[in-house]
Image (tube, rainbow, N blue to C red):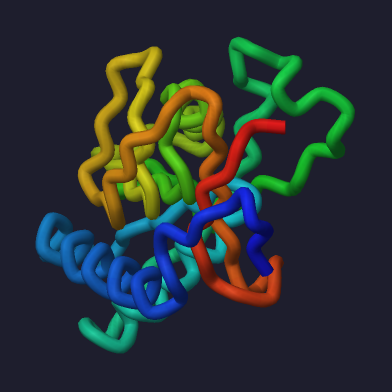
Length: 180
């Protein structure tokens, strides 16, 4: 449900098309990688990673490993998530020598992704790390660039991009609103 101050940027159908396209792109860039690992960042990135894995299974016939990661302990701005309980991180069989795609809902400053790459080292040395995001909103503070993007949505700093995922929020949508 959106309020009068919110604007829907992506609908459920838009998100389905974007996740299907990204799944194909991941396969194209990781053609011979049946050991592919998708690592979803808590919380919405985890559900997007599971959707990519299901799409890849339907398209290619194999299911990539899906891991979960909460990178907040590795952030350089710990106030961002203070007071919230840490969520479990688990990557079955680690990442040693395997191609990894980090999956997140929104890419903004790049600090969460930097923290995720640092956290990933605790699970081994990946052969390559790529990044897939549903929304790239710009305003990078670090030199981080995703290989797979659902939609580039330029925003103002005072705006907030909210990704709604059916598994958590009851519906799929990307909504633009004002920072609280």
